[in-house]
Image (tube, rainbow, N blue to C red; front, side, top):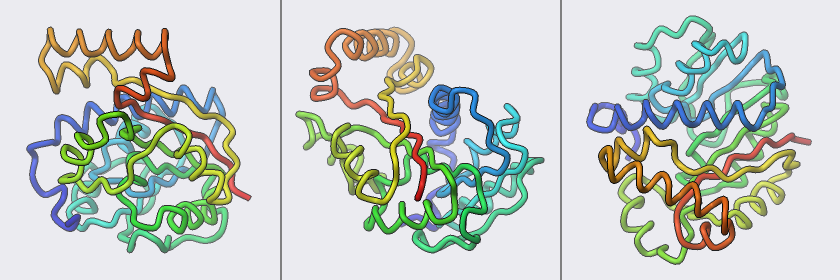
Length: 228
């Protein structure tokens, strides 16, 4: 499914906008903590790496990706601080133990059949991990499966099940936060007016009634974890 996943450009603008909000989430979670060597695990077409490089987050960047089309797209970006780009099988990372200060798995785990195997391997290679997933296990799970299934989502999380996954994968959760979509993302998907309304509803609902909001609407969760 994933070999030619990044060959077309129909969803490229969406991925670029999504990468901006993901880097903002990273900034929020790490709270100014410095990481010299960063590995993007499941780096896609390199959109997040490109933003990290421009923001000078990390002195040295590296990428692993399962898709050959993703590898090609990453290399085409010519990211200045990117030291290595390697293809992997999804479960075995071609790097030594604790060779990176921070590993990123951004909207990857929802695609992975053996989540704990994946996270344990990421924890082997990285001292800390930032993991981000969509929280799609709402009252409308049937809709989430129907809409996200064609994009390879096979795991659907609540905040509680996501946190449990991290803890049962040998990770210590240092910070965990729920994020709504950015305004730019909502407007890209729904148009200027409707996107603004969706942004306001999603954001205010989360502030006022967080538990009810997360049972009703899909959000995102980001976690900074340390590995043993």
